[in-house]
Amino acid sequence: MDTEKILGLFREITSGVLIEIALVFAVATAIVLASQKVLPWFADHLHGKQRLFALAMIPTIRVIVFIIGFVWIVPLVIEPTMQNMVAILGAAGLAIGFALKDYVSSLIAGIVAVYELPYRPGDWIEVEGTYGEVKHIGMRAVEIVTPDDTVVFIPHLKLWSNLIHNANNGGPSLMCVVDFYLHPEHDAHRVKHLLEDVALTSPYVQLAKPIVVVAKEEPWGTHYRLKAYPIDPRQQFQFMTDLTARGKNCLRQLPVNFAQLSPEHVVQASPY
Image (cartoon, rainbow, N blue to C red; front, side, top):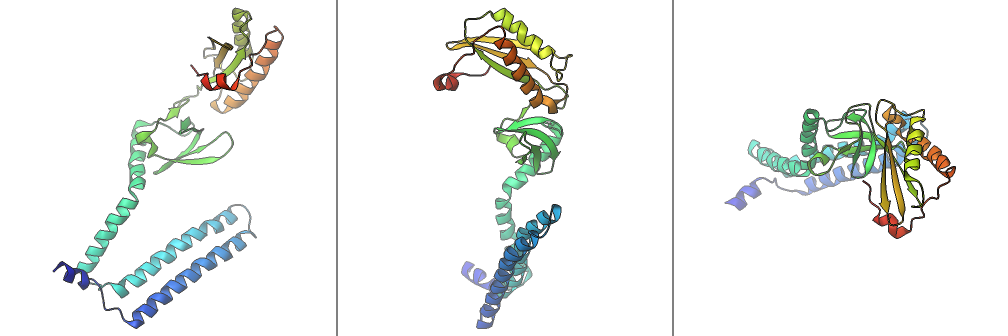
């Protein structure tokens, strides 16, 4: 009985139907191949957004051709009754739902993100080692721009299983940390005060926030971490560069010897 129901879904396949299916496949393949040849050639004669739009049409045309071909072929093979259509659409719905489960999960995570606000436009976040400024929050993904001016799209799905590091959490304050590695033979109090002065005299420093110097003794020497806040989070890299350059110059004038770390010590050194 089940076999009869399954066979009842299909129409009689004649030579004419096979020829028509073959023609649909041939035409669809020709259109896709032609778009892959013509559109890149056409895009080479355009500039800016027009060129990117022309290139983006290649996968779009491929999807449209696939959908038209599928809609054309299915009635040739399947008996187009209400019962058959319900069965086919149900099976297709299950398959599509399984294929798009991550997409749906990202959409739900996007709704959760709107409520919990783990990131907002203007926040500096790190997800799986990718660090950048949040530029746009879509339904499926958050768009960030890295310090190297690369746009990265991170699915909201990462909320479920990954740590989201938010450096400024919706505010204007973002802590910057600059490291210095010195030979152990030196006056630690003098170095501490010098690094504090370096931060205080930076044109990027936010004076309303604290400036902290943390020292930790290691087998290879003394590790100093200078912590301070720039006026604007977007200035963090200029701020860190300024602290590093002027800090090194001031330390050389003490004089102080810098520690020479071996690769083994570099691996073992841990932040705090």
